[in-house]
Every structure is written in structure tokens, then in C-alpha cells.
Length: 274
Image 1 (cartoon, helix red, strand yellow):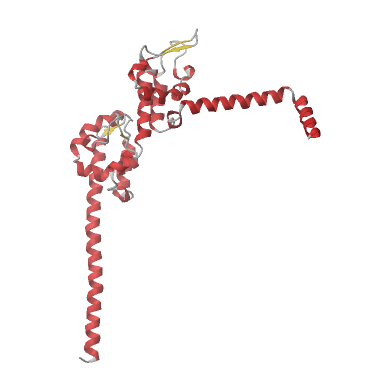
Image 2 (cartoon, rainbow, N blue to C red; image 1 turned 135 degrees about the vertical axis):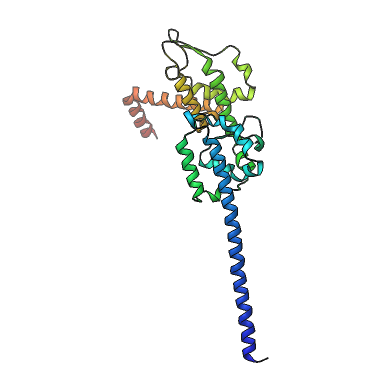
């Protein structure tokens, strides 16, 4: 075999390898792009279902049955994390595992403009990296804090919202037997939270003694958004220790303020004796 033949064979093999690699990469990218476009359409389809309930700013919870019936399990697995990251309020019920067959939404009002913005972001490919993230791992990752929030909301809805405030006696009365609606562990978790939201001035009408509905609704939204997580997850014993330390420190500061000259003299005498 002469040199020209060897070079020609080598060149042919090289060209074949390179062209094969590029062709394989091209076909893979085309297939992947087609797959991503299909998932984008599924995500937009899910948002369109929710969007139908945006009239008069109805709640996301009103769209849950339609959403679950329109999308199958495989479709929901592909897009749920993406929708949640974009702002769709998906709920984790207390005491239940995440059930993809029956997705629950929070009672947040649906904003049509927000839904349209989500659709645009998905259509432009800005959320492609959020597709196919494992749903079970994602939603079970924060089960504890979601459970705490649900317990807090249960207290607000069933107890605080049914309480009566007596302005003359400055007394807030909870419904009789309200503790029976909570387990012992739930009651323990609520103790610090109850102390912090017991502001009768803020949450109750001072004249009628009834809960201020608008502020109660705002409180529920704040719980959903995580603003009360610190109090819901604060152990009552640790909270009491913090108060005791704070009181001790304040007592010491007040003593120093009361007799600053005597304290100064005592310090000087201690230094001289030392």
C-alpha cells in the first residue's frame, strides 16, 4: 500500500469520525430541543387552566380540580417544581405525604398579569432548567416548616378568628375548648406564636371586640410567606430562657443607671484593693 493510499484512508476515516460526531450531536440536540418544547407547552397548558379562574381574582384553590383533571401524573412531574418556583402556591397538607394525583393550591388570589408573565418566561426558555426536577424530593424537603405554617394558620382560622376582645377588661377570650382541636405537640409548638400574635390592638376592632377580617387575612398571607417561621419554630423553654436573660440584663443596666457614682466608686476601690 503506497503513501497516498494510506493518507487517503486516514483522511476518509477522520472525516467520517468527525462528521459522525457532529451528526450525532446535532440529532441529540434536535431531539432534546423537541422534548423541551413539549414540556414548555405542558407548563403553559397548566397555567392556562389556572388563568381561567383569574376573573375577579378568584383563589388558586378554586382551580385545583380542573388542574388535576387536565394534566396527567407524568405531565405534573415534569412541570410542578417549575410552576412553584415561578410563584404558583402549591400546598403541602398537614400530616399527609405529597400526593401528585391530587395537587392542592393555597387560597392566594390569582393575578392574570402574573400568570401571563409566567407564560412568557416559560415560552422564552428561561425556566428550562427547572423542568424534571424530582417532585417528591423537592416538596418533602421542607415538610416541617410547611407543617408548622399549617398549624399556625389553623390556630388563626379556628381560634383567633373566633375570639372576642373585651376592651374594658382588656381581656381576649378564646373559644371554649379550643385546645381540644389540637394535639399536645401542636399546642406546644403554638405557645410562642400565640404570645406574639396576641396583640388585641392590631387584630381586633376595639369597639366591637371582633376580629379585624382584613388584618386576619393579611396575617394568614404572612404565615404562608414564611414571615412567622421563626416564632412557629421557637421552643417555648428556649423562649422563656431568652426572656429571663433579657430581664436579668435589663435589671443590671437599671442598677448602673440608678447609682452611677456609687458604682464608679466601687470600681475604683476594687481596682485599688486589687
